Image (cartoon, rainbow, N blue to C red; front, side, top):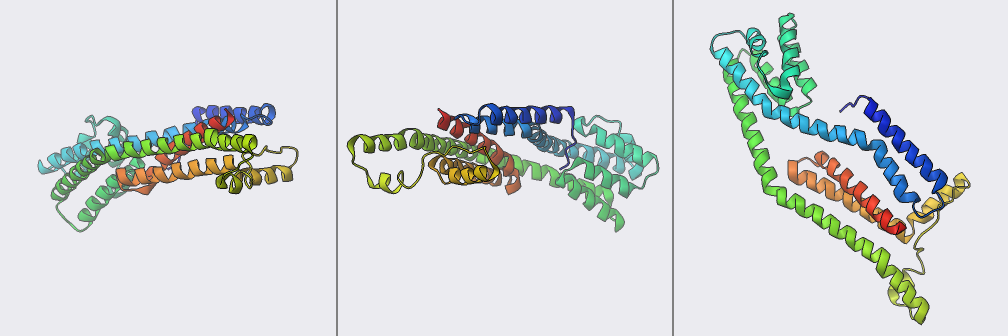
Length: 299
């Protein structure tokens, strides 16, 4: 999917860079450097994520409207109107968000652009795989001299059945999606409790009593709880980042990111049957987890 650079993107990028620069200049030696940095990165990509989600929703709405267009086209063909004239005629009807694509299709046909090219352009610009497959089926039937009206009727029935199956599937697994979000929140809460309460308590218990549990001996003594990032030189920065990733706070953050990313993929697979659809859930969970865990570490 190609996203054009607009004023909203520019504003988001400027805000994100501004927050990151302010963070690295004024907060780099404070405990808030990580949460503010992640907030700046989130602002940087926010508009792109929003447009991606809006695009996915728009494609779904186009797929909902497309069967109505095909049904009207079938009715026009059954009345004896040729295919190109039928498209021009029904192109004046109202099909909601599908109107710009149908108007362009009708105009191209009226300008004597070949029907195949016009239909391919129509399918490509909707960015819907379902609509693309439907158009390809119609074009194949036309090339082999099939009954276009019958093929379109079959395509309409198939589209309606596919959408009904998807809606039933989404309704069935809606509870499972909510459950996965709750599980991630519980996991995040457990990590926060461990890093903010359990680890400090064990360290305090060892320092006051002189008695260290096996967990403390093998954990806290070998792993640093936190590491300050060195901004004085490139080599120092890289070394401190590596050390930070090996610290307890770094490990907790990596656990949260990995859990959020994988949980999002699972949610996408459950809801749509496509792992790629889970990327939006992965982005939401990973960013949310990063913000919460870094703020908890700063506190």
